[in-house]
Image (cartoon, rainbow, N blue to C red; front, side, top):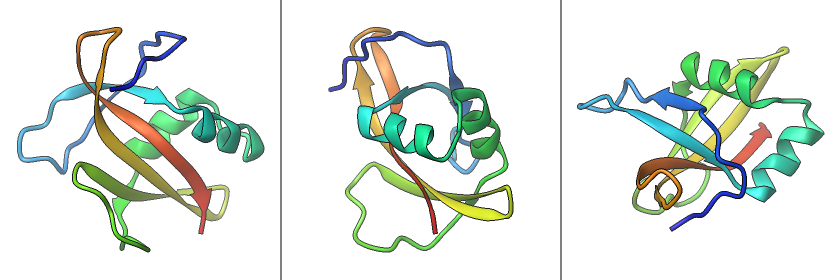
Length: 102
């Protein structure tokens, strides 16, 4: 379970899922640091997720994790998301774990 300290209204629909559903995106502190390094704000992240494509996982992914790739500023970014339960909104959400260029 993940408790965010800043409740946000950032949502994303995973269209690759057989039953697409709009879910909140919570950003981990590690991912927020990576976003600051690469100058990515949450709105840009949502755009990157909407234009993403599946990429080969580098290592083993845990159950409920997905890795997506997205092009931004002539770089391919690897985005790692995990399904989690958000206490703040009392429903399942996506937890952003990593945002790194390949």
